[in-house]
Length: 352
Image 1 (cartoon, rainbow, N blue to C red):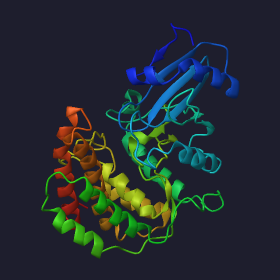
Image 2 (cartoon, one colour):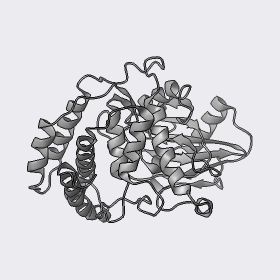
Image 3 (cartoon, helix red, strand yellow):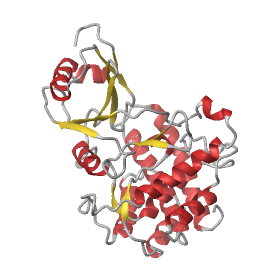
Image 4 (cartoon, rainbow, N blue to C red):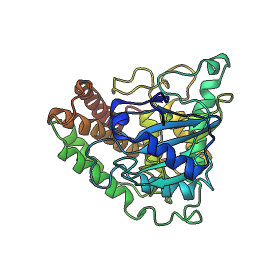
């Protein structure tokens, strides 16, 4: 790659990735067009890093772990690559993976390359062209639930993913794991947790039939058709995917589904705008479309609010001990408090 190549990435990525060697490798393995290779970084920070690689009309996406220390078993790109290899043929919204590599002559961590999906990601705002059609927000809502139902209906054994997880006792292990993570990352005592933890441990419901679950199914992890808000063309970030209780997925999706009047949880969402389905309507649609009994959804929502609070607390803890230098993280404390309050409100049947 020549010195004037179009590489729009972070300083860390520019320094730690040998872009010329990567280009040579990709041209050899994927028969890329002869045009100059252009690179744009989509994400940076504490999550997995994602880069768009473009040569003429050929585009692809590279995924790799963040720079610096990575805890054991975290950010496992090889696992994600293997999941996509088996899932894509039966669930086309999962991107098709091309190759996996761990060559330290290219970069210091392993990476994989997959197909590029074309469409729009809805995060902090709704695409302008969607706003022109009445009912588009309802279509977006329905697409989110219907695609989740499609994922949960995949026969994971036929897809060769039978060894992906341990469905038996999955929910109990999840509860115990998130409680342990809370204790390990605790910076301040929240008295409300003394009420939530025993309730979570003592009210674990029976799980429905296991399915493939994404485990981080939310709007900014999916891509919609540019022309049709009722069509989701891509689902991303499969690192946490496993086989387990499908209502875990539904619960986490609903927790991210902000409604008007919700307290600040330090996360952006557009679903509090007029036209989107309510949390209750989303749950009812899932039950109707999937045939899965959602009678105990209250429990899954309490767990999901608690889980999200712990995720923010883990970041806050790392900032508090000086491991993270980003002072924006200190504001996550507000989100932690409000998420725990939402968990309690849900437990007390005041939210749904």
